Image 1 (cartoon, rainbow, N blue to C red):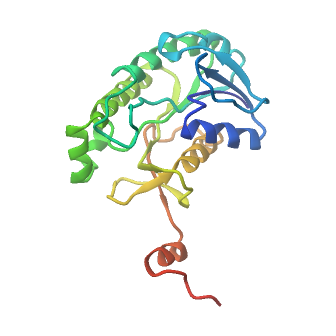
Image 2: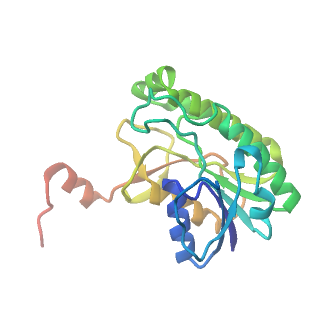
Length: 232
């Protein structure tokens, strides 16, 4: 497939690039002119700024689908109280531009990363996560993601907005769609990218906002609790 990746220099975005190339897809990426990250030379890089709608028409030219790994950024990503460096409506405005550009380019399919706890899934969050949403900048980001989902729902496009649980840098295991969000639930960024690429091959009629997490195989879970599992 010919895929346009938005947010290609972020954690999930870099995984989409690496895994997409491994699967033989032809990739284009919209990259801010000020970025210093170098991407694989096999990718068609288009300079632009998605929040302003710049470069999207060129990046979407000839695409079969869009994979969006954009997200609001904080000054200190590890501190949920840190101020946002992105506009508070970053995803809402960017998604509006993306939808318009997709319709001009006659590209109908998009998979965009959201988050567990966005929209109606907030009621399923544990008390700790509810506290963070109520008191930190994470709440601002989640409201913006809810606006993104609403725009996609009204767009008439073939869309998916997976809601991953807590993101990690490790591949955690088998990916599952889950209704709950436990305090220890997490999923690797590489797993999210893999789920998104797999979703391109799944038939229509799927849930639009699945909450996804990763479950370790039983043996790995036992090792995590009790040390190395006994050998044969």
